[in-house]
Length: 444
Image (cartoon, one colour):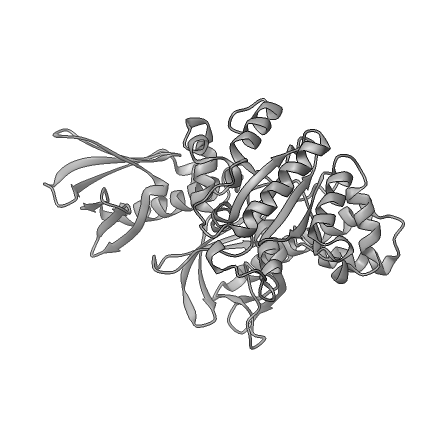
């Protein structure tokens, strides 16, 4: 799309049932503007487009949602009708991906493909990027799929239909219950092999990065331990001691054997039950193809419906606490699998947010500030990040160990009896002030 912008198209247009007028539609990198000699300028960002449809040569664009929603109708477009629809859809896909912190290279094509996923089928836009694949059905009623590269399983060319069958291997592309491919791209013809190559390269890149990170952390571990850890610690997937087996103590020491995380890890384990405390490690490259710059984090389950998360990296200023269940539904113990699901969700959000914690944690007033626009856009674009913010309770600043531990224990005690999800820990404001001062940035 980028090599065709700005684009200018003449049309007859009508806005939300108003009078028709001759207009010029201009599309650039940021959105669309509509100018007419007898009316005020209309404009919208691509992310505002809720639906685009074409019927009988008339292009309808719904902008919304909410009470200010509008409908724009364009006609007498001639051969430009299809171009207008494509540019609007491509612009929306790119802008919403950018909002969700996905960078795409200029000129990256958006393909239009036929797909099938279980009982669902149709036509969709498809865009490859370094972290995975975006699949956006043309049918506006269908959800978009943001497929992480580590969730891609088997990839096979299906010569009989000129397509590609992709197996699911994770949350963003879940395996089909009957063992069938999670996703099929159909009737691609001669380019099926190229599409299969792109899917395979993404999957294999995630595995290569995990292998290199594990080798860098634990070069003295046995081959079997490193091989297992590479498969388990794939692109931010959190792993427990039981899952990692003999690789756990080596990776635990490598990831957590440096201040201040060694001390905070010991305290969190003590609060969580000592040697029986549920705990996990996760890792991912800072950027795909850069395993020499790994990001590591650990999580510890705590009493009172809480899980703690620490990002082990330079500049980490706080311990982050999340609730596992809605407070009203917590009766003193967690159902089977609830803690694991919370840990997986937090890790997915951290990965999707490119390791930014501020969108999860900033108080509402700071999140509403102009400087936090990037975070608000990311929250609107990333369901995993929005879920993590909903579950977020507070963060406790790393200052002297005694005050940090005191604040942490106070939070755990308070949360054990909290039942209203709207209630805020009384110590949160003081902790936020400490974090802002340490970071030198009021927005995080």
